[in-house]
Length: 166
Image (cartoon, rainbow, N blue to C red; front, side, top):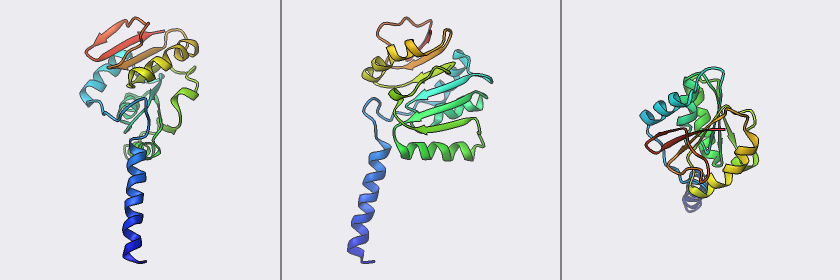
């Protein structure tokens, strides 16, 4: 192959990967600090026998931590490259209870969820508010970080994290 063809193809591939990593308009990719994750998951009651979802799972760190706490953990993510990266990390850590799904968080049902973690911008959180109120079973827990439901009252707060019960 000619070098003049290889360089543009490499640049194009790099652009595609970069655009996929930063896909999504409801949440920029901002990783949460691990010490904060562990603390808030414990406060929310993540443990064996619970079904945990993260809506917009990014690099998978929250889902993986919930899986380490033995919850059945599912991450829904719009960026296919982040899904692949998260699956690779779950396999590397041998966490069979961590599943990552590529898809639109607004088009899935969460009726089987015990605990949901959300770190989205205001617009995304507001879009989920009524949907989750309709779908979630009584007693389900929702954790929001930084941007919170406009009309729900949390039962616990810890810094940027608010915890709600349906």
